[in-house]
Amino acid sequence: MTTESQSTAIEAFTFGDPEPVLDRRMLIDHLQALNNGRWYEPPLSLDGLARAFHASPHHASAIHLKRNLLVGSFEPTRLLDRASFKAWVQDYLIFGNGYLERRQNRLGEPLRLVHLMGKYTRRGLEDGQWFFLQPGAEPVELGKGSVFQLRQAEINQEVYGLPEYLSTLQSALLNESATLFRRKYYLNGSHAGFILYATGEFADGDIDALREQLKRAKGPGNFRNLFVHAPAGKENGIKLIPVAEVAAKDEFLGIKNTTRDDVLAAHRVPPQLLGIVPTNAGGFGKVTEAVDAFYELEIEPLKREFETLNDWLGMEAVRWKERPLPAA
Image 1 (tube, rainbow, N blue to C red):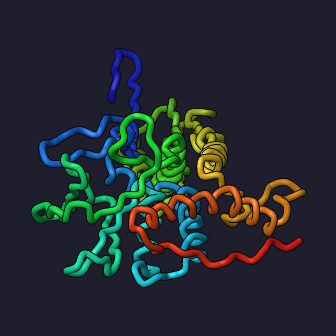
Image 2: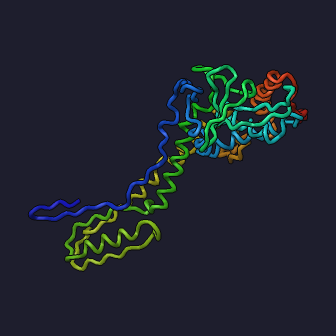
């Protein structure tokens, strides 16, 4: 942009395009389970929930911790192997729904239980009707009454469950956005940014040469030094005003720590179980005590949820190993 007058000519320009961060505004638009004529659509974007799973390290790690504790406690049975159980648990924790398909013999006796990917499984309009939406292929209708759905309770509809961490999803996305912004901030060289304020008299071509050198100082090859010689210049004719000092005072660490705490509160996971380093001198207390409390308050209730498969099936498919008693 150039502004000219009869007495002076002031030239100002900017360099470095703004870098966008992730935009997932449509992820948590809460809807009812809409009827599309064949099946019910989920009230939230399952693809969005799958993407958000990787948004925050604490969000993903908390889910992995619960999954691993459940898998470690699980004892494989004739109907359900460990791999299918692991995938079933992970879907339930991420999407609020976990599905298993019952494969049976000609006499109607169950042979084994197969995991159905929760991202692509849909409930049909008829009772006991299910569809599997194969990516890039026609939907497959599954046998009526052959699919077991484990769903988290939901207050707005009773077709699909929703994950219990929805209240902290914005915090997880903000945590990711802060990290991505800081990465792009460094890659773009903006941390070495400044305003060059020039009021002196310069020969023809000096401003163009100075502009070119400043542009080359951005992007790859950051932290380049710039030498300016103005023989006829006056004191303070050229001022360098750092911008990085302002950027360094942003709330990056505050955002990271606050959103981390929000995520851990939603998942109810003690921080020491995720390898978080304490900032206070007293630390977090004994890890074994935190594990025992977490196991009793979170894992044991989850076990009872997965045991409902046995009631639906009429036989034992989910069995647990006996956990050693906590140390005194």
